[in-house]
Length: 249
Image 1 (cartoon, one colour):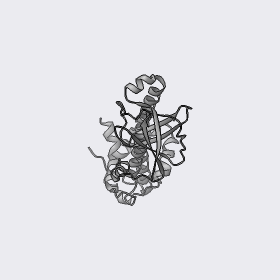
Image 2 (tube, rainbow, N blue to C red; image 1 turned 45 degrees about the vertical axis):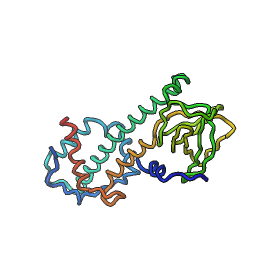
Image 3 (cartoon, one colour; image 1 turned 135 degrees about the vertical axis):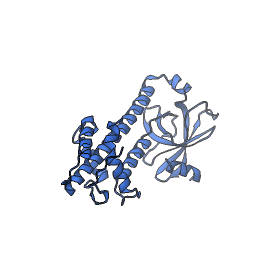
Image 4 (cartoon, rainbow, N blue to C red; image 1 turned 60 degrees about the vertical axis):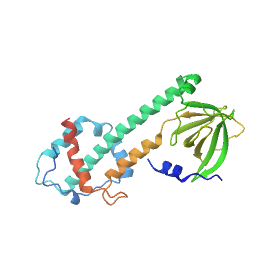
């Protein structure tokens, strides 16, 4: 088993306010299980939560004083604000991810192999050699078949790659380390490579960044007793001012 440097492990692991006086965030309960219910609550109403009409409706509720509003009504309003905030940011993150995915898939399908290599998005004729494991992943070292240095390429540590062989089999992985004469990659433990083949790698879209963005959004919307000690008061303050801040743009 090869020894993976500690720095590489660290590199992989590391990546007009309108609140009415009747609102007291510390006393308003959240009835949502953030991880399980936000997406389903949003998608159950189609485009409602990302619509401008919904922002207008929420802003009207927040700017109209209602002294008789019950605790349950306050809780429901906060729930609606949280779902709206989540839906709009989730939608933006998803659109960006799909845009990047489409660009990369279109590049692989429509560009000639010569152009992909010239622009540094693809490397071909690579040998793969096992170099041990990193946590639950297998590590392989890729070297040029002629044992020379790599030419120009864009691959760097942390990039997501698609590894394929001449038979059309492909596997997704990540660049662990790069040098002039080799690139170390990690692939899932279930991956079995035929080491008699030559391989090709293509720069692929980064789903990890997308998932981390969604996780950060979920953590922000969790109450203060979640994993990350985010102030509920600060979170709710942002929620209550959110509709008006967009309408005023």
